[in-house]
Length: 373
Image 1 (tube, rainbow, N blue to C red):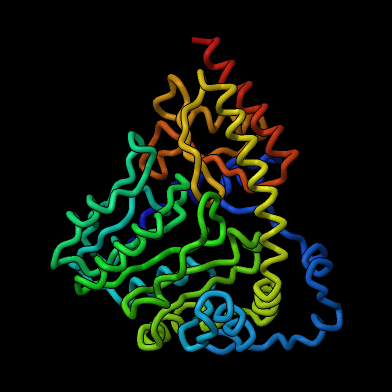
Image 2 (image 1 turned 45 degrees about the horizontal axis):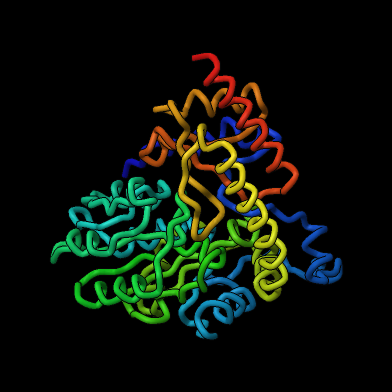
């Protein structure tokens, strides 16, 4: 197995921990343990009672129940806790795919959604979200890509990095497409609870036996440091993941499982706070883009906390992003890692004061570049 280097992760290693203003990440503002304890009423005694032992292979009972109550109408048998959604992607693809299989994957995509299948020896067919249509998903085009050879469709909606999303009708059409073929749908729902202009969609794993839903504490919940995710699927599918889990992580930490369970049990409070801040930042970004329409073009996201803008006269944004990191103490992610070198991933889920300052620094850098031409 050969996994190519992930350009996104290489960039984050270079700049994520060494810049003070973050306009590149794809999650909401993170919580400290103190903030989480105050919000959810987690006591020191409660934490002291946690035994630092192994956890069950499918995840601890309280965590699975919390995930099930939120996403599978209480059906715990359809839940496996994973070491972030990255482990879920890895074990699902290795359990359900073989070398030579054909998969259709949304493009652009988070690197694991393509690289794991490629490392297995699968043939990738890319369902492109196109900038000329504002990255809106075209289900008619998807239908032309799915053939009797297709064994998996891989999507993430709301989409990272463009913020595109499906309507309910498109969602239903996607499930009908699954129903008409011998394939699995892998639905990366990292941003499922961050939808701006419509109601969140249900997880398709609750509606179809050949659908697999993936989730994480890293994005909408602002708890990436727990490294807790989940896989939602029929029990028969989850059973196929256990041997791979045994070879990789065996189980999760009961401490982070407990924090994740408490966060999911108090999800409405956590989401209300972080959604409100991200929504205000999105409005700021919208106003900023209109004020600087000679410098930037973009499509307003329908969900998630990332946008995918382009800048006037810049065909490759890597030098700009590097300059922002080294001279302006600002993280921005070049679009080359998503196959669009003329764009950047711009995250708006962070602290509001830092977001305002970040937009100011970005405008300064863009203006200086234009004046230097």
